[in-house]
Image (cartoon, rainbow over all chains, first blue to last red; front, top):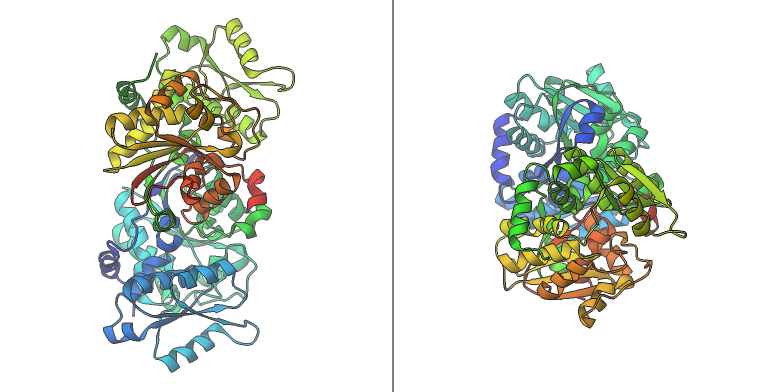
Length: 316
Length: 316
């Protein structure tokens, strides 16, 4: 089981008219600060406020009709939950979402507002996978995981494909890295379209399982990392994701909390883009010099804009 | 002395390649909340972070060569100062900006960072007009006021022109209103291109001089209004601005502080756009029902994105 460029091209066709083609921004100041020419693909303007809609819609639209009638189940405390809730509504598929009972009220409400059934659980007494699998079996629901799935990865790869086709001659493409759905999809798209370009992932230093996995050659884990980048708090890379990342990615770099916040505020204040902490990871690596790409034309995927302003107040 | 549509068309040609053509955004949720079809022109993505660059560049590029060598002077505590500083740098024109000594440090720094000379004054012992005129006379500088000037108004009108040419069949165009530069320019552009469309201004209820002027038929004033919308704290409409507004505008409506903040947070949280309080005025009027345009196609100019996050923390 793998993901080929043809799968990403097919995903583009499925997303046509359903997902937004997100705009690309530039900033003279960002270029001066990093020494590179940066092209920011703002997935904050994707439906649901993050790239996750791409994978969710691509996966749900490939269910067989009987399964689509029966419904799907997923677990996520964040953007994947909302993406499945929204994509399923558009496709008329019943959705059950397992979320921690202490998830931010705004995220529970947003997921419910798209018409999904939300089932909450207590993190201390059960795991979401265990609960999710039990419910899915009992109700006959198909599980659509947040990243370790070929249809999810192919969908996420469409963002890089759009960026590469819009901006000529990119030398590198950068994305944040959590479970590796966006990075794996980006890697497959970039390798095919630009065989010589670099593909980089940026990960919180406090949740550096992907950095370590990339170096050790086996899947490493973290446990409830305390990073502000909530989209990258995943315990480990997915299996399929890791396989694709090992084959196609140039490097994965760790980014400090301070650099994440500094890059996020730059995006807000100077570029006028609401981007969540996870979405600022790649720019953080460029701004603090962890990743140096002087003189290069660099595509940067800003993964989402679902910032929790109340939680981010201390940094303003 | 007036402003004709031909002046706006000429301004478009001058701005070509210098100003950004700003993107237009839509939101299903905003349409549901207001009952209208809204098209948001995001001047936050204009150079300098606000529409002000349009008027500033249009005015400075029409100076005669001798005056351009000698330089210009303006007074502003906000976006006009930065716009003149930036436009003058691009055109190689020396700039002197008179700003209150208690202006936000970030705005003083931004204006200086564009290479302008900033002269500060004490609000309690002098007025900026008095000080500005003295310095301009002594140094032989041309004064470029923030709104009461035909070249400024014509430049600001280019935003509405772009919006109307991009989005077919608008029934109304809305802008915030401070000194009336953006509203007057928008009114001239809209009346010419869409003779039957409504043109509306939205003003803070705490600084309702333009609303009162529109009704009384003479220029009314306010004194240091305590509105959060700092771009609309101007003491009164400009003379030329008022003349054009009386002839071409459909109505000016007052917006409560609460509605300004609610609309601004909607733009941040749901549309992922960093917009400053003044930029949220028109949406505020639509969201709270002060202005009802059911079923209409409405252009909304989001005037700028220079939000002072530290000052806005209490509302998050």
